[in-house]
Image (cartoon, rainbow, N blue to C red; front, top):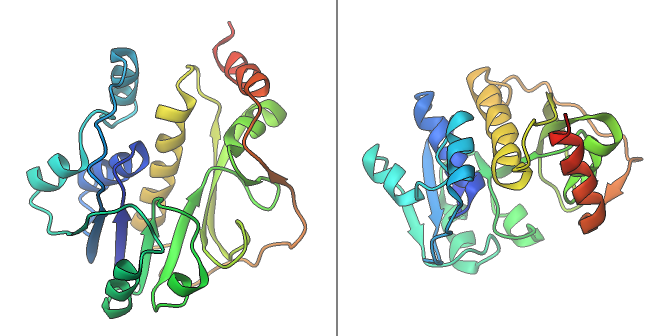
Length: 228
């Protein structure tokens, strides 16, 4: 099965790419949506913590690609629904693309040919929607990731694989924990050929959808991770 990945210039894509390189996993195709946004100025503590978890959040996508001599197709925008990208994907011979970000997939891109796999930081159907890792830390003292095929609804596609993780013991949940648990699940999916296995699970249509967490609840979740 031919699997590709669509990267964007953010921490999640950096982590996915670095973990793929470390594990010597070669994908059929790499697409990089790059709008040349300013480079984030991460605190040294965050950079060090990311390195403890197997990636360098400060290392640009382009540097990783060039150092590993990975061929890639670059687009000067970050928009998964851009007509130019859709046209390219429609001509691709990749059957699957790993989605890393760039917007909510509209019908035109969903129906252009390849299927899209998302690594969602929540065990669906109980944790659909946004910032689910914070809610699950508050509710259950842990978090999970679901790999699923994307469809026209939010986090409702067929489940490929689900994996649970202990809550972090640090405060960098957005910057380090989120990309870490997603990337670890991605490597598990690819190494163990879980997409090729064709053993997918239909979701229960009933579940819980969450929205961007309130700052007070976010703070409670972080305190739950760093308290003695």
